[in-house]
Image (cartoon, rainbow, N blue to C red):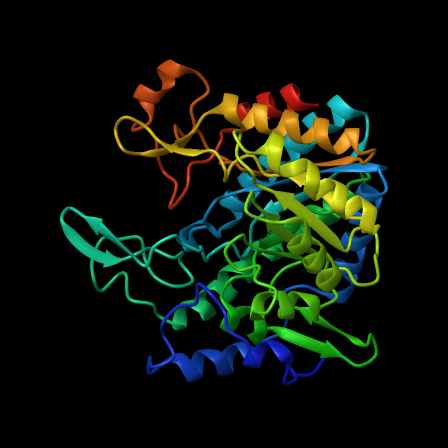
Length: 391
């Protein structure tokens, strides 16, 4: 497979990009990526596409779960095993509830960059660049730590390589029991990294997005005339698109046309993150539009990102009752339109944390083990309770 070809996305604007073009290591970091092997293969991506097609046709379900923001310091075999085991537990729970085979996709091996609502934040009275994930900068509250460093893209590549090696070993062992995966996924955010690992295969006639099996576009980067949509439209990987309450039916149909022009089952997953208060009104016209246009998408509920609140002590949290309410309404709307609910997209910790609130009294315990680098994650037990309540 050759190096990336000059493509449409290179001349298009892009939101949420690090300001590091003038960094002295920028060119060298890009050169390292351009000369590196892709992290995933055409065969793996094709197998995942086969599984997603089963979900789109109503023959299977899907659980996509993992960290909000991965840490470079959790790329060892022990951390990877714990995260894969948590994903297995949730998939097994959904399989037991639905009686269907469940596809397992982790927010893992690349979820190192985060879009943010503001470029700066104030910490202890000091204004600093916002933390954007370990691919870009550090969470430590200092000016030096928060400077974007393009060398971190190379570190992200090596961390992802280590995790994917362990996931492949686990996948080989699980295949004897009829399981496939787990598959990697992350938000395709930092274009220097994502495009730097695109590889064109003349024999296949399509390009491979090399950093992950399943990339998605976020709510903040799904502009139709911008680079993120053009990039994901050009690759053979199955792709996802986050969709929030500000999305209109016209915009969503244009996104579907760009990302799924041939209407291939499982090629496109729509990941709806509406918020408990918006889902009942905002979701039905979007579902009707996609159904009428004939796009065989995977319908996923992300109840996390529209339901983030500030607790009394100032920490961000999510209330399990809100997550359950949104996903239940999502299922009701999608099934009323005669479509199959593919599953859930969740932020879940493999370890015991106190970041989301299951019961009112738990808000007082948020500071006990609040370990997330960015947004609050469910525990496996809370995520299992959500699955039980929705399915």
